[in-house]
Image (tube, rainbow over all chains, first blue to last red; front, side, top):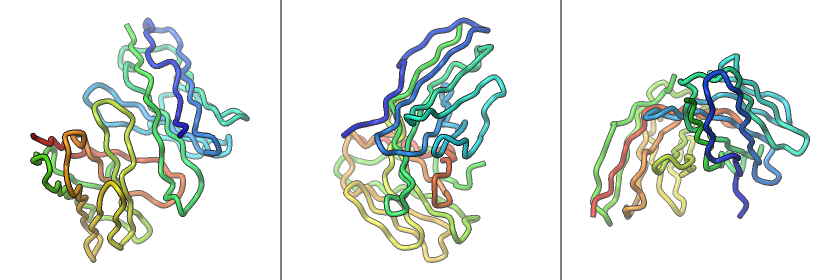
Length: 115
Length: 110
């Protein structure tokens, strides 16, 4: 079965650089979520999109922005990178279906290292 | 903030049932209890969810107390591959984000 695809899987950047993370949801899933997991920490919600519109916003820094495109893929743009942005970034997708419990399917993550 | 309390760690012998407790005393009437797990830096994986009735699927069983203030996730025959951090999450129905608390680190021992 198709899964959530994230690219790149690993990314190394310098401080103050920019980074773009991409997420391709499972086909026919209409909602995308972004989560950040710092070293030794639990995942934290950043932002989500439903049908290409922002639906919820969590603890996403102002330096970050995201969008969902017409083909439902999503990109997380990160500018002025700081050492503290080093983390695993997960994308998840779900379908708006009560009978399926709005289960979120997670991708393998992108490991961002800021030097 | 997370609305749940879980023990930080538990051990379980391989082949035995693993019973993971969760307290959610402030749960509201329209909030569900969800369980996810994360195996060593992989993406979290959905296990099961419920509102007030006990639920069972191919992975686990979920027992919710009558007052809904606590629940227990049961892995009937734990294997080494079940070693993971297990998260109990209280959440409204719908495409709402997951709020992860500290979770329970389950170690299955041979």
